[in-house]
Image (tube, rainbow, N blue to C red; front, side, top):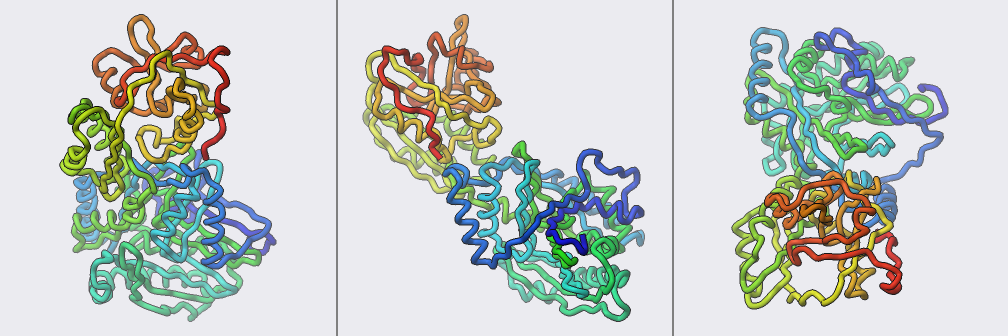
Length: 554
């Protein structure tokens, strides 16, 4: 790897450090038998781009995505520990410090979430929100990595090696000079500088280790960071030897390093995995650059994801302050606008909303999942401004910031005669977590409705999922009557939790059941809160020419 003619991308889990330094492993630790501790991807060549070139490349590839794929974000964010348990862990660390075991422990926990959209779109959105020097994207079949790391672990050019440890954080709204002058943050930063000088000394030429810069302040959209720089000369040392001496980076372990890693491993409830490990590249000839994998998302193919956060705990740390620092470090993700809005379509009849409670309950649940601002009082106020006399279709949208927009259109009566529904040839992905929420990311549905717009007898387009199961209509839920009971596809098939659907389930008039196209052959119902239940059937030869459904709405 040091002298080959290939380029390599490396993703190194934090727990690799337990193999490199077995004394640092917590008692009873064993490697995961399935997940590798180090992953390498080999490339025959490398294309170098400056910042403008990367932006142009991103724009080109994002344009090629379907419209809904460009809406990307996360939902259902949940911390792997609650604040009370976090404070208890801080107190246990401080007990170790008081007993003389260590000076500092970097204590971490994961945030678990669901991600949606294309990983490239998510990377692009996060990159624009938090530009950093050491970020990256890995898109692999088994999942992806999005790193927005501001911290350099190691960079080698020839025999020269540089590390830039980052220790000390303050909100962007505060004075950066206050961070620079903070005795606590300067002491923590200097502690890590000394640790890294010691680690570098294990492989460096005698007398070559030096601190090039101390206590510099770097600015990012949500916070200030204190950074120092240490360098050394490492003639004759290869990638493996340097990694063995320094991995993982001392800025994310604590001091002394081995004991701090033992304590962190004892107290942390889950493996860190890539978080606080390293991500980077290795060039032909042996030069390399690795970041410290902080502000780094791991994306699984099943739509789940995780982001680690943490902070350095010392004797005078306050549990609540450290918890808030961890939340601050995750703000680049938790405050990301996914580029979509939530929708509710309501029936307004002579000044009343018959199913308002159901609409607000669904909207509140979706807002909580996506991290949108939800103000029920404001929503009710805006909805009350819609026209009162007659029958109206009211469309409400809610943005990430809580902005509410309402439009109203007079509802025409349902046309007389039998209504029809057609089945799309384009499947939907039932695993997409956005299927559980009514949003503006619905290009495939709007495209299908546009294709039937010239046929008033066609009420809706029914979609199947990737397994061939009935999922839902473009604007309705599907119901099949069997023995006086309505059967409707479960959410696992890709059905939206419709307001009318929830009402019928709660009343015992419907139950969930997996349906196939064969179940629709003898007629079925399509229902939503706007129109109620509409009896429909599939078209037959006598129903005339049908539109060419199945064209992707991308």
